[in-house]
Each structure stands twice: as structure tokens, then as C-alpha cells.
Image (cartoon, rainbow, N blue to C red):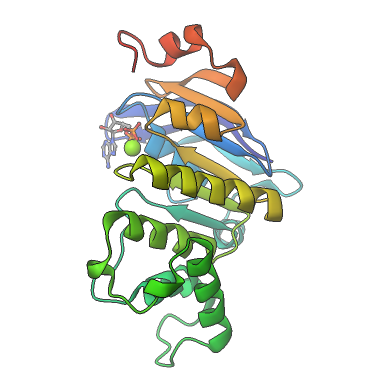
Length: 243
Ligand SMILES: Nc1ncnc2c1ncn2[C@@H]1O[C@H](COP(=O)(O)OP(=O)(O)O)[C@@H](O)[C@H]1O
Ligand SMILES: [Mg+2]
């Protein structure tokens, strides 16, 4: 389990997370939902260790606070993030983009080709997202959905204990969303991976997640099981309109 304890984050003059305390259960999928600008991406940044809170702590069960350079490095090694814009390198083949997920596992200036064991891992990750046949295709020759799946494979190849996704299914067609959701469910069941996803579509979030965290204006407005996210919770997290 990972816990946030009274986490506050400032960006410029604004406090964009305000005393957020929440628990992220291990081996489960937690969805983070809320309107644009409420602090969802900032929360992901705190959870992957890229954003240091101005106040509060990130805690890992059995390890305590993630504080200091070496604890942070160890934490980041076990974490992978799928970004909304996939951040692929267009001129590289799909498999090389997946290998970049392992960049911190070898010397940054290594002139050598990727070791065979890592290439096998990358091929397996591409296989898991159904893209092994596109391994040698350049990223800029892939469709949007294929690029998204390469982004997921690049995260999975790290065999992370914690997988974070910042709207990983934005601009992905509904059939593919179902496929990716099923893939994540399977990975969670097999490996006990912990997953936190910022989700745009509340229906998908409720169908996929075990737990939901709803943010309004940098604060927790809902924290509970997905089944408990009822009409009242919906109005609290998405005030004014249905969504
Ligand atoms: N680099 C930044 N500098 C200053 N303000 C930022 C920066 N990034 C985001 N913000 C502000 O922080 C708030 C929360 O942003 P964000 O976490 O991206 O929200 P969300 O992902 O829910 O849309 C927003 O008001 C946004 O304008
Ligand atoms: Mg965002």
C-alpha cells in the first residue's frame, strides 16, 4: 500500500494540492477523477516522485516515508508511468521505444546494443499489448491506438510494482479501451501490480477501478470503492453539470 499524508503542492502562487491524504491499495486499480485543473496530473507527479510536495509525505507500507535521494531512486525504479501524449520517439521502431522503458537499468552512455535479455523483455511487453507484429515499425508509422499500446508496453516492460497512467486512454477508441482495461486487469491479477489511473471517462473509471479518488480544487471530494461512487458522489466531484 502507498499512502499520501497531508500532501500539499504549490505551483507558482497557487496551492494545487491542499492537504491530500489518501491510501492507494496494493494489487488493485485506483482511478483518479475530477474536472480539468483540479490537480489530477499533479497527484500522479507526486506518486511517481517527479513532484516533491511542499508539505506532507509519500509513504510505502513496510518501507516508511520516501525521503532522500536513495529512497526516491529505489521507489522510482519500481514505478512506471504511461503519459497521455505517449511521448514516443517517432523515428525509432516500436521495440526501441519500449526498450526506453528500461533506460535506467543500464549505463546512460552505453554505446552497446540493448542486451538480448532486455530485448526479449521488450518483445514480451509488445506481445502483451498485441503488437509483436509491429515491433520493427517506426513509431510515426503506427496508428494512434497502436502508439498508445506501445506507451503501455514501455511501462509494463519495467515490471513495475506501481503503474501510473495520466489519462492513458484519452483519444483511444472504446473497443481498444476495453482491451487495454482487460490487459491491466490481467496484469494486476497476475503480478499484484498496483495501478493508479487518471481517467477522463467516469464510466470507464467505474467499470475498471476497484477504488475511486475524486478531486475538486486540489482537495479530496470522494474516496471510496467504485461501487460507492453514486449520483451524489458524482455531483460532488463534478459539480454543475453531469460531467
Ligand atoms: N507547471 C505549472 N506551473 C504552474 N501551474 C501549473 C503547472 N502545471 C499545472 N499547473 C496548475 O495546477 C493546477 C492543477 O493542474 P493539473 O494537476 O495539471 O490538473 P489536472 O490534471 O486535474 O487537469 C491547474 O490549475 C494548473 O493550471
Ligand atoms: Mg491532467
